[in-house]
Amino acid sequence: MKLLIIDNEPELRSGIKALLVAYCPEITNIEEAEGVKTGLQKIKEFQPDILLLDVEMDDGNGFDLMQQVTNPSFQLIFVTAHNQYAIEAFKFSAIDYLLKPLDPESLQSSIQKALTYLRSKDLNKQIEFLLKQINDKNEHGKRIVLKDIDNIYFIKVTDIL
Image (tube, rainbow, N blue to C red; front, side, top):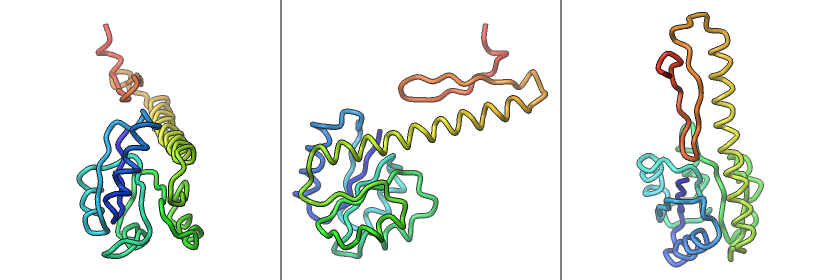
């Protein structure tokens, strides 16, 4: 899983990254950005599965950033020192709101919650595909879904020996 940390404080980004490495082995690729502008660019390039987003940054705030993201495909977790923004955070479909300094168990719990949501999206894709295949009368184009730990594969039945 890919995770992006957007926070204007380099020491905090390093600390969060260290906690993720120590407590969240499912996260295999971690990138960082320091503000709204670089965060938007990094979201487009990196396409994270999970976004850890600070609220107050030097060039705007996390809500400014989220208003500029169209069709987010990541799970959003706000990480901030300011508890007064919690209600606003959930308006952006954040799955959690963590206060600094981070507690390793809370971070781990939030990441697990995000992973559960991401896996359920895969399940929804599989169900949607299955229903489409059931309704498709063309036997030559039928496919099955095969999944390994990293990917989902849609294989034509006629390609199976």
